[in-house]
Image (cartoon, rainbow, N blue to C red; front, side, top):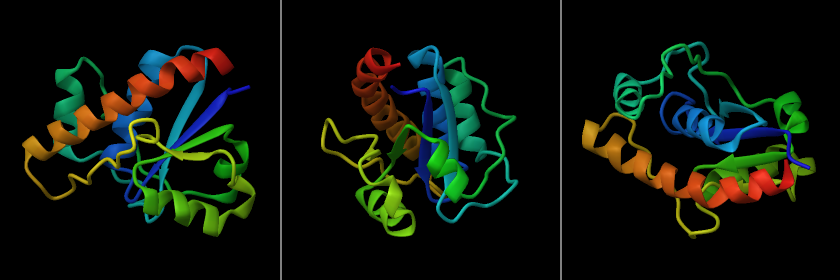
Length: 145
């Protein structure tokens, strides 16, 4: 049963908050949180991420970055990373997470490229990858919620 989802990237100011809020919009009755492997703790989302999500009708401006922790990993029923390297790092740091950590792009076999420090166009590309991954995961999440 999936009740809690943790979405992970590096800084927790671009990709994982975008995915967190999009999954939250589409998945229904699950709790979705996010964190970073090397988070910029307390930082708001990147302005480009805020703009891209706002264009989609989703407000992420209140999000604040936080660090991945043992508690967050333990509490999650499903952990979705943006890249294969993130998945491996989560399992290295938290071996007990094995079996519940997957890439957001697992089903389509892709990583979500990091748009940090790049143009708004890079954020739109990242969002499209995120949307593709979320659309592939949501039916599975709903079936197991």
